[in-house]
Length: 64
Image (cartoon, rainbow, N blue to C red):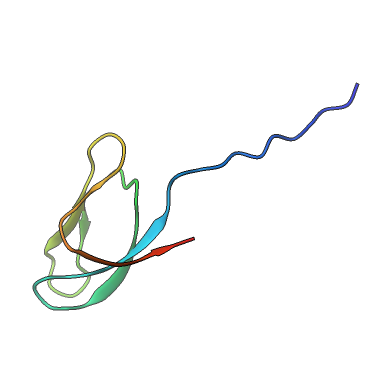
């Protein structure tokens, strides 16, 4: 018997965002499970929703 390895295609991505308060750029995970704050000013950038995270800042680029 041979086993085949299944390739899973995920829809989760890393996203480059910019903080609206201090303009610092940061890379976040699109399906974050916890609140993500700006590293410079502490403003909440991402909130979890059970699936895709709610992004509360400007998206600059979706990374592969």
